[in-house]
Image (cartoon, rainbow over all chains, first blue to last red):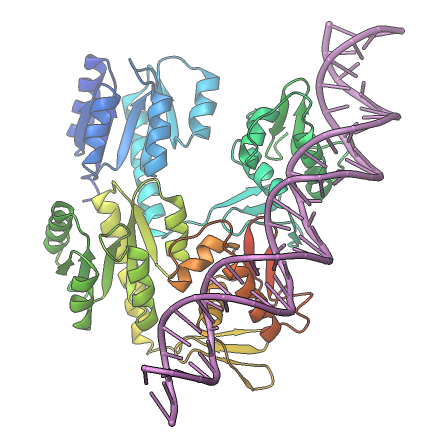
Length: 235
Length: 235
DNA sequence: CCGTTCTGTTTACAATCCGTTTACAGCATT
DNA sequence: AATGCTGTAAACGGATTGTAAACAGAACGG
């Protein structure tokens, strides 16, 4: 069975798709093909797909949209494929939950290696049971289910509801700049007008709880004129 | 015997149920099927079920209610099958003692892997003998089978049904913040509107029974705007 | 049957929490 | 330097919580 995994190829260009399918079939995989989102959904609904090779450029719904949809219902392995080496798309795709990424033109053997590697990882993952929703950064640990923040020294740090929601929002999108409007969505806060300073105050309180030097923040950075970014402690 | 475990599939949709049954039968498992709570009870009464696959959406009694009933009399492995958008139900299910879960549409092989994994775990447990379901915290002892609470001084403290259910729920998930809605699930109280103060009153009564200083609780803490947490006496 | 008891629920109101507003000083960007 | 944006202390007030008391209806006993 190790070599009988089911791979779904989502690619609009027929030549590329068939070439890929042939190569992987010869390696002993079961293959399904889809040319767009509609066909992908149909194939995926079968329920036994182990890995999806997903082109990022598709007619109609694009690959990132489909990735998001997949991730809402499954943790199946996904490798994104794109035509140009677009750094932005790569980062966005990985942030949205893609497991790996290759750029065209790619080496078939490399793709095969990455696929096997990912399959091994996802199978192992699945055996681990229900995962805990925990985010780690700079020695801190945020448990989303327990709503609990633990410091690098192992101490519990109490967060109010607003502080927790804000930190969750930021931590879930590391590297992405979030506007105030954007962040307020996480606080059951309907409308927003430019004079609303709520986010600023909450961010300030958060910084005093998690930054070494709240005056010179390193985890939650402000982007002047735009909003805030969570750096994940990696600068 | 390793490959001759007995799996009970509880699922109202006949097509899904038969598909599942066929797949697992082919893998060498003994299968029973049930379309609702009544049939489940009948099959389960046989007494040799090793694993239950339990759909969360069922006509009549819903999956969570059945899960609770099962957990009152057995530690049998339970994997919940949830609709894709029900994050809340997923969390509640795990809190109520489900061992694992999958979301529809699910990958058959993933479900098989999780089932085998869980069987390995639960079978091991059983061989260890029928464990007493007792929870200890801060000198207290709560016996879940006898529904009895014993104080650090060794005295029996009487709990009403609601108080007991609530304390059980909290004690079974130390450190996890539970919403009121969430806690009411343990009281056969499916509906909830924001003006329902039942939980607050019961928590208050519980605190007066188990906290040193009910005004400054240390076991059951309130999380403003969210719900309550049981700390396990560890702060 | 009828009264009694027990207990979950509702009601009411005071106490507390914390998100929000306000105000102003300091900083970034032009 | 001018202007707009951000940081933050302080105060405010709507929402949330604690709790006593009343209520209701199920369980129980005679």
